[in-house]
Length: 219
Image (cartoon, rainbow, N blue to C red):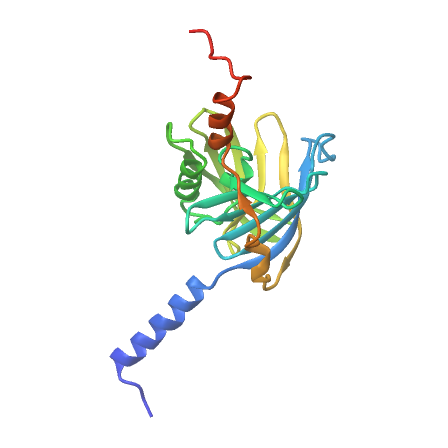
């Protein structure tokens, strides 16, 4: 039985839309490198997990702090499991602004949005295409980007995952994703436990101002 053209077109549209909207899910190692490819002496490294617009970044430091980002909702939190606290990440890590899903054809739109989430509303990100390149067999779009503060970086965006695989500063510092494993990620990785309390630095400052230790700055 042949399908009528309008019905066939509708089904094709649903199939195509479903494919385009299907969330990429993967995990990878975060690696800090020098320009020559050696490990950065002060680099923390860590792990990264992605499920659609949700990103979890675990930096390998003693505090165990992790970052949870939901690019669709425009949220970014720093979570301290040992203290059972979480707070708005703001500008505590540039990774919450840059290590997020992006449109390879227009990455600056998402980076600009996440910079606003971090509290940086001054100026606009600028992105210019700089060709294509394979990284470990993965096709990427190379992008020259400039932050609102004028800091220049180069990004390599995986065209399948729609995610930066590598970021490099003009002085050669690099952060790169390695050992990528495409697989469904457990939802619990991107959740904050209900017993965790949100920490507000502004409230702490307000309490300090009311104490005997606060000294008003000299104007």
